[in-house]
Length: 232
Length: 232
DNA sequence: CGAATTATTGACGTTGTTCAATGGATGTGG
DNA sequence: CCACATCCATTGAACAACGTCAATAATTCG
Image 1 (tube, rainbow over the protein chains, first blue to last red):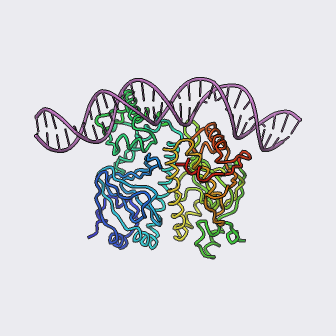
Image 2 (spheres, each protein chain N blue to C red):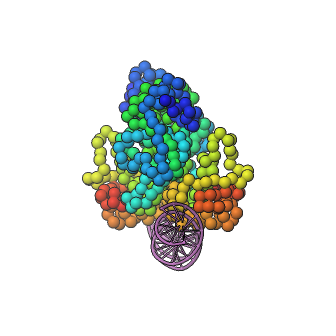
Image 3 (cartoon, helix red, strand yellow):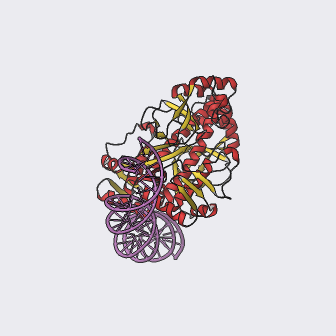
């Protein structure tokens, strides 16, 4: 059977441009896999054996310093691509943050398929270019923003990426409740801060009426404009 | 006439896999251009009109916060690719740091050519994937390293990238003199620090015998191992 | 040679980290 | 269903690293 036809990210993932025959071929070399929250998919420094598409869930890409301090390098959401095609080793680890569903390939199979299907390579190129842009924007945050700006930026971006693309959501307007896919420690690891600093910033934003905090991971954005102002 | 045949980066740039006919075609849509040190090639936020290959020299990619603080997002050396194919706008500015020679294309022409030549797209994909890896490694530096580690890492990477690929240079061993392509301020902008902090770190490394400083931009790495130790 | 630019150095302030204690939530076994 | 253990988050106080401001020194360039 062919999973792809019913795939939730069929029109957004890198396979979107393939026709039925090609999809069938790709389907035959990939397989679905569920990953529990906290389960690791790829390890930093390992041989690059697998690549994957994210179908449902959220994963973190991360690396650590010799001293053991972690830095989260990026988050992967549905339709994002994971792993290092045409590469030797994984330069970062990948771990699911919530229960996640992916579509995995052996890198060797994927590489071969990709080289034979320029349409797929083109989509992958576009996606990689976008990811590079996003990553560079994140560098500005890490290098030049203070704790308040970092957290405000993080909340805005998370709200945006969590909104299903289909629902035509635009930031701003009404209060919006979001369920954070990350713990406080992980947020700290994304922003290059400590957990204490993150916690203090949350408390302050709540006190100032920018956000509401209902549960550890349950945040409501009350004042978009004020949040955006603090992000710059 | 066809510049490509005599091009210094003919075997390393994204055009390396093209045959003579294809190179001829590519040559006809591109042109050589010299850029002075300090001259800007692309502006952050502008429409993405141009893309280019670096032939000789060094350029910086940079972005700034609303408050006007600059962050250098990356450096481009010979054979690197510049600009945003298949994109709308430049998400960062590009400026030459030293007298530089590039091979420019109108993005529209380049995009069309690329879509018709999967070999070129493949090279561009490999390069973009490598650049993404490099950029993510830099995020670890920005987010989790202190000033000393940042500067040590910067010096090591600069020494490596400045060494002509041909000469089989490996870090370590004998003292090595390098001419920094960046001012102190620019180094600060790469590392997410201030010029004063960079200056103090330089002074300290010199005092500790790790490096020699002959002129503002003229550094000799005296003790590779000690420098590598401080980088982690 | 002198002006302008860039870098260094010092004194001081601020932000975020570190260390330590407390608080709140979640889950398990009795 | 409660008691307890565990985990995660919050809060406070002291400290260190880096930033800021200001003065001086060294280069570069006309």
